[in-house]
Length: 277
Image 1 (cartoon, helix red, strand yellow):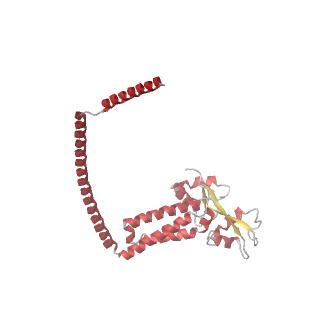
Image 2 (spheres, rainbow, N blue to C red; image 1 turned 90 degrees about the horizontal axis):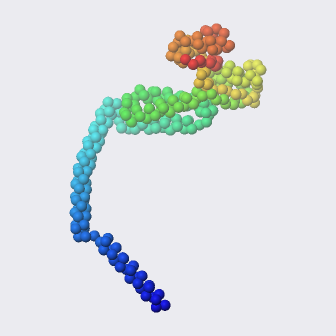
Image 3 (cartoon, rainbow, N blue to C red; image 1 turned 90 degrees about the vertical axis):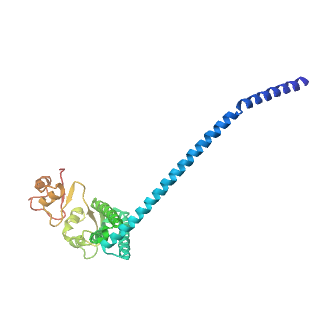
């Protein structure tokens, strides 16, 4: 027991002496302390100088920003004078553009078949915006930006409307293909009735005989390499539209000889194949 205690004391003494030695090794000398303090003071001085320099730059930038704000305010005043409009009129113009943007975004959220039936709403908005572009207020940068956004939304809507899609129509008493095609939420053009007929050949044996409660498929749009003929179209005009070269009308004729007997005879509702240029 005595030997154990003595051994323990000896071990503790050795560990204690080692710790003291290590502490002495880790202890900072006065010269090292003075050097580190001098380095820190130098770094603090440099940082303070940087802060003062940056504060000057910030003050200068704030001055430039204030000058820009004054210039913008002056420019806005000049614009208001040029457009000859009051703040109230300008605000009303901007609010109407915001409302149109909201309506168009709502239309874009609709399913394709629903959007097609409401395309008249989009076209009416497009016509309204075209009229608003004639107003001098539209030249104000903020308004021009909103109008550009509207043009983008209208482009997206037109692209979706042009995609092929089919909706169902339930025949009502007194309906005929001419009147169905004439409906505003469908083709809004009675001369397009043959398209409904062709799309329902299995249901319609005689285009003059349809019956209440019949469900007819009403196709809209065409594929990217097709063209839907409407009133006033002829091959020369179509070639000018799709190829930007009216002389290439014969390419369309050659690709559609099965349904175009004479080059000068095409009819509304025909869907023509358009060969690649």
